[in-house]
Length: 241
Ligand SMILES: C[S@@+](CC[C@H](N)C(=O)[O-])C[C@H]1O[C@@H](n2cnc3c(N)ncnc32)[C@H](O)[C@@H]1O
Image (tube, helix red, strand yellow):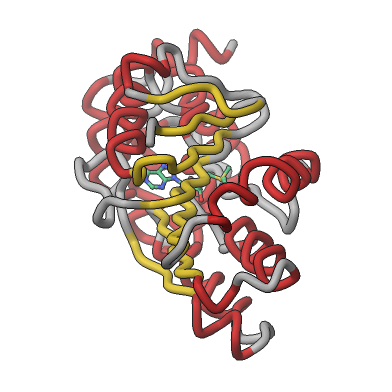
């Protein structure tokens, strides 16, 4: 069965059962993405259809975690897309570091924290850690547990700056406003267009004046000006001061 046929064949009731058992906002993910991940889950769990998969997930917590991480796509890595960290160091961070006061950084959709930790290591090297607050948020508790485990290997100074919290970016609210830098890379690519639009508005409104939003290397805002943002570099946007 092709991915499209599979997407079409997943009955509403089965989708609802998968959403219920996985506790994931499945309606916000693109159909093709769901169909691809579903196809993989059927193969890896050895079941024939979505209804059987829902029953398996309800009975097996390990399979459930596998499914949740694959739908939410938890791939990440330290200094992923290194040219984006070069851009941060060369162009995006210097104006932020020149401002007085705290530098608040939010990694929205942080997975196991690798992205935020990379940024923390960069700020440590630039001597700016003392003024920094670093927040990583993710939909999945499973990912945040990994983040907590990984951060035990970091310096005391860096660990003291890090905070992790569970948050569904599409459920409506940001963790306060006034962020100088928001990283939201490789998160929205799996979302439907309406979900992406909601997320873009949330992120733009959460920036401090002069604050910067950095998306992934395959992502762009459709209408940055409508959100009060100006292009600030490849896949980067600045809120007017
Ligand atoms: C591909 S990873 C990206 C991780 C990191 N930003 C990077 O680029 O390396 C996508 C992350 O977004 C999270 N995510 C997906 N949907 C989300 C939502 N509605 N709210 C918050 N996080 C979400 C996933 O759990 C996953 O950890």
